[in-house]
Amino acid sequence: MAVKVLWEPERARGEVRPPEGDEPRLKSGDPRQAPGSTYLFRKLQEHRMAEAARERGTRWIGRIDGALRPLAVDGVLRRFPTPRLLLDAAYLVAAGSERALQETVTRLDGEMAGLRFLVTGPWPPYSFVPGPDPKAG
Image 1: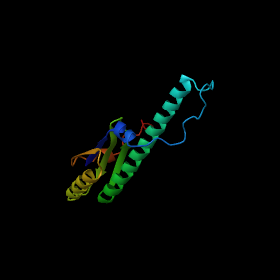
Image 2: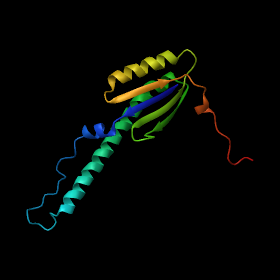
Image 3: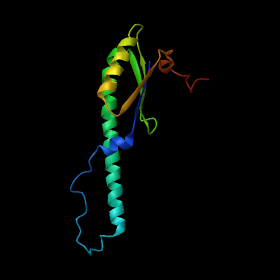
């Protein structure tokens, strides 16, 4: 079964508050109070907020995989494959367990605001078949 999870990293970034107390405290007229320092401080805040959003995404991936992995024989995860795709996963599910996985995804979709889930399959288990050995031949 394929499970794709879309997210809006900008929205996740917007939900993260920048750290307080990091703003440079320089007196007016201080030569270090230049437009460049304000710009660099703003870029630092943006970087920290992006990192915090990515950490949030990593926690979401852990929660999703933690709920789905017990329903599968095996799983393959691709984390953050594109900016909008949080997770691209394939779960090897025993025959007859597809419905349980779908129901769990539906429950997660209801609990995890800001994420969109897409489940497809069952598919042939090509994600779990090793490719040719490049050293052979």
